[in-house]
Length: 379
Image (cartoon, rainbow, N blue to C red; front, top):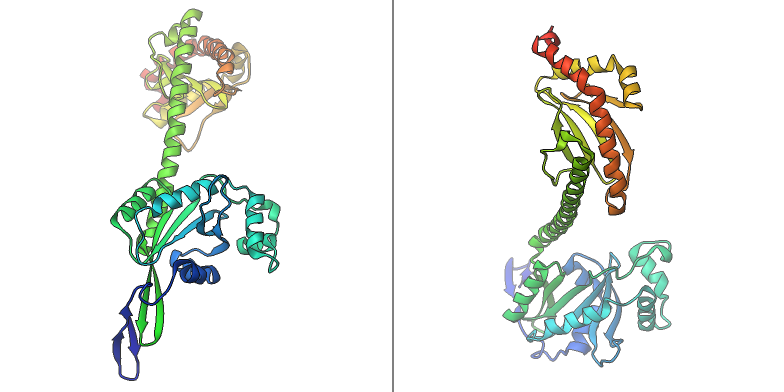
């Protein structure tokens, strides 16, 4: 670190020193500096902090004390462990114990801890509301989940400490290392605070990647559960349909997809059974490569809508879908598809209505297939 001498247009090097050399102690000095000016720490972290206690010892059955306890702008607790010239090798273990202890603190307990720290100098509830920029304390959530943060402060970090902190970050625990380095220039003393893990340039990127990974893991978990449910559902459904004598799906295998398809006799047009979280559906999907042919088939069937719906026994949902190549004719019912208790009724409904759909449309589709082959759709 250098001082700029404007008059001489020169740089003057500041002498790096140590806390012990200049007579500073951890609790009397470094801890007090940070507690009295959390802005210094907040600027280094890129996140404002509200110090709510120092030398906190409210852990049942222990006599241990954490150096500083703070809240961040998200209402999460931040455990801050200070060391002077050397981090030592046990600082990570200490801080993780404190974070684990603090993870169970409830909203009322946090307010009580802060109020004891303030004494008669302020109101904890009011100061928390002001810090979090919330009007109503009832709407504030404090210390949610297991997202407590850990900050280590020292002039030098041992390799075993930095390696462990990096490993913690890879496992989505917000642990950070800040170097606190004293400098001297003549009789003046300076303190430089630098975040070294993660580097400031990488911090935002690492946060985004961690959020992305969490989102992807969550989505993959949901997807795997959906796949397992669908496979189990179709196994039961196909067995029931074979027992019902519905030969249309006799040679179809269970799938992890939300649909099963069987041929209608017209190339590119299929009967579909649909299983979803919210409904069961039977449908005819007209999905030939040629849009004109799909719309022609749909229009021919739609022209006989009244008779077809009378034969089917219910009003159908006719979807010409002008902006798409394909068209659909479908019939659905609401079910709680992800509740296995609903499956027997759901499977019975699908089997019955697929039989009715095939019986209603099969003769007409055979006739339309012959007309397609003669090129009538392209006239």
